[in-house]
Amino acid sequence: MKSGPRLVDSHCHLTDPRLRDEIGPVAERAHQAGLVAAIVVGTSAANSHECVELCEGSDWMFPTAGLHPCHLLEEPFEPAWGKVESLARLGVVRALGETGLDNYWKEVPLDLQEDSLRRHLSLSRELDKPVILHCRDAADRLLLILGEAARSGPVSGVLHSFAGTEREAEAGLAAGLHLSFSGMITYPKNENLRRVAAVIPNDRILIETDAPYLAPQPWRGKRNEPSHMVATCEALARARGQTFAEVAALTTANAFRLFRLGPPPSPNPMM
Image 1 (cartoon, rainbow, N blue to C red):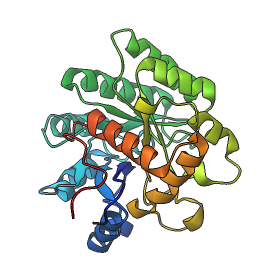
Image 2: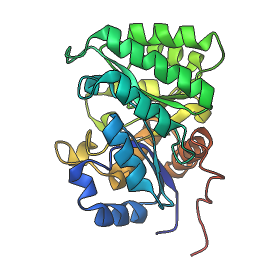
Image 3: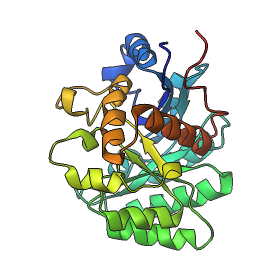
């Protein structure tokens, strides 16, 4: 691993065959880019189990367990939820999710999505583990549910691949959440998103790839992978008027704290 700033990919799907089938080279490129940890996110009961298996014995990959709102019809819901709940209770599982609301594809009934979301939020609080939230074309409803949950105390978790407005960002922060920015912040037309990212408090911001999706501008339209997070960190630093090293340090510290990965590493370890 090179010396210099350290990075954490707070949301990726390394069980996707496009990445898992060459996890060795993917990991090597990630480490050369400064990556010290990756949160490997589950999207179904079966996939969450795959995440736990992939991360077993790893010192840099950490799994989550959850039911993605777009995948809720892939398995019978009650048995799937039971499996996710059991996985979530494992010490190696660092978060609940990915859960949330998606009103873009309109394939999964919103009442089922909301039921799943509320279960994730409740279990997150019970287990004192953060929740990873997906939102597409459903911000008002999601924020309403989060506001209700926050009446019992701050919601520990993250709005992943945030692409919303400043008002939505403020509501998420008020509920207690972190906001994570993906390669979308590098896209030329996303100036409004960069303005939102510029005002997020230092202690509530994360970066991610959402690999293999949402590759930053230099690789847009191609398969994404954790090493590409460097471009996202660079764009976020420019938007915030900070250095790359500053954004790397604060987002890494935030991720280590939120996901309880231990003390954050030194930005310039002895080689």
